[in-house]
Amino acid sequence: MTSKQTQSPMPTESKVTPLGSHLKQHTRLNVFGPFVTKEGAENLRRYHYVGEDHSLVAGYMYYYWNQVIKLFPIRLSPNLITMLGLSFVVFGLLMFYAFTGRIIEVPTGSENPTQLPPALIALFAVLLFAYQTMDAVDGLQGKRVDMYNNPTTEIFDHFTDATVTCLSGIAGIGMLQLEKWQGLLTILSAWITFYC
Image (cartoon, rainbow, N blue to C red; front, side, top):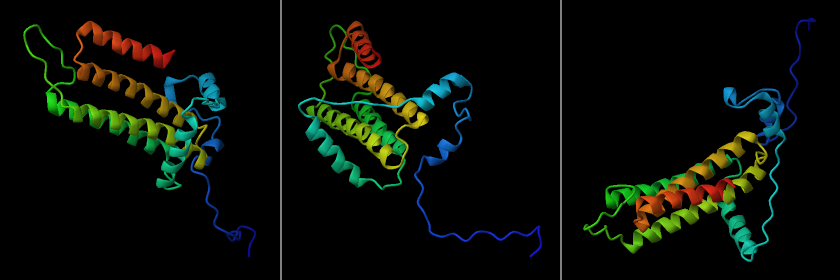
């Protein structure tokens, strides 16, 4: 062998790398583009979510979520689970639109508002619970694939939460057939609760 030729190392064993491990190698790369400053990107990289739930149903919900997470493949991106949850809410809103012909049903003076079937309201409640389940399970999946503290995953998850807050508020306005000012108060209360 000449000095220019090198022998390639033989792989010893095939090791499965965590899904998000390649992102840790590029700590100086600003993956957020012009939307986040370099200082903001560094703060996002250092961000670590810590939450505790001491409610009465927490133990039951964690048991339920730990059973649901077993249904997903180990290598599935948590962002796909987040998108699945969002699709449940969008589907519910589309079902509401298909039945009423509009997203927000505003009753007017002498007209009788559309009577919504209880099954449609129950369907949206089930789909909203399915979203909540996917929102909890995506964090568990993030831990499984080492993407739990990934800044882009966190931003995507919180963006989806904010979107669902708006969409479920709109669906609530339509299902309750609120007046314009009542609907505005409903959306504002959802936003204040979510963002504060």
